[in-house]
Image (cartoon, rainbow, N blue to C red):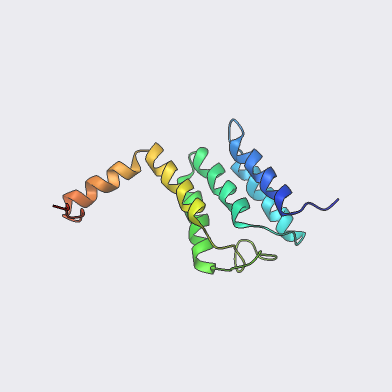
Length: 125
C-alpha cells in the first residue's frame, strides 16, 4: 500500500506532536517519501517546521520556511524536496513560526528593538 498525501501529513503530525518531538525522523521520512515520488503537501512541511520549533531548533525551522518561500512551487513537489520543488508556505506555516517566537519571547524582543529604533507603528488617535 502506497501512502497518500493524507497519510504522510498524519505521520508528520505524529512526529511533531511526540514527546519529545522528533524533527530528524520527520524530515528523514519526508525525504524518503520524496524519493519515492509521493505527494508532499504544505501541511506535511508545516508539521516538520513545527517539530523543529518544538524541539528548540528555530534556525532549522526558519531555514525550511525560507526554502519554501524561495521556491514558491504551487503544486505537490515530487522531486528535490530540499531544492527545486518545495510547496509554498501558507498562513499555517507562518502561524507555526509566530507561536514558537512567542513561546521563546522573541516576539517581545522584536517589538522592543523596533521601539528602541523608532520603528514602532504610530498610535492611532
